[in-house]
Length: 253
Ligand SMILES: Nc1ncnc2c1ncn2[C@@H]1O[C@H](COP(=O)(O)OP(=O)(O)OP(=O)(O)O)[C@@H](O)[C@H]1O
Image (cartoon, rainbow, N blue to C red):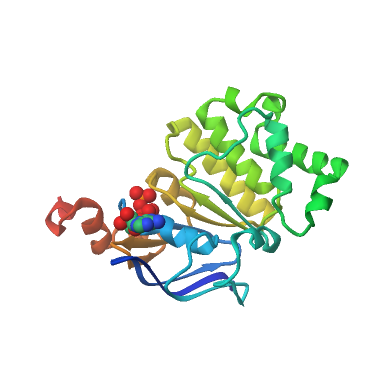
């Protein structure tokens, strides 16, 4: 395997606060990689650097070897990088199908005029296929606002799939989901990874999902990487136990 995404010595400062400090991580092509850590550890900040919403103060980020550190966020879709957001960003008054179809137009390899002239057949067929694979087919004509929360989270993933991504960035996809919904998300992400070869990087607090689907996990605490490895390695790492439970003593308990 080779790295699809490499983060090298990235530091992010907000005024006097160092939110991320010399953070490095490599996501291998075809892997499911999770970025975890306690609240305020710097996970979303790293995510926002990758999707080019934040500019690192120092360091380099490469995608398939290309330095993307200076690119604008809208050019990421054209490079096959899709992301879902922590807070749902759906078009509530549009149907499930329309939401997915619109997702396809965030791929910015077209001019504005071309985007105003849709390719209905191609986009419709692709959207139907995504609804089938994400289990949303029966909700095709339901407004996004009419879905329950679990299906809205699935729709957020479905919309990201509309650009046929090579790398899918998911920001807390399991937040607020019930156990059965987490299992469904687990099956979906595993299937997207195994059958479509999509590399997935997720930030997530729900350990049931992280430990089940991840090939590799990186752990941030106070902006610094404290551990990295397989789920088993990370779960038993003393610094991870300490970061989550507060003290080494608590970790042993
Ligand atoms: N735009 C910003 N301006 C100033 N400070 C920020 C900004 N974004 C994040 N921070 C700060 O950077 C630190 C890391 O925040 P970040 O949101 O990346 O953590 P996180 O690990 O994603 O947390 P959570 O799990 O709660 O979402 C925090 O102290 C946060 O307050």
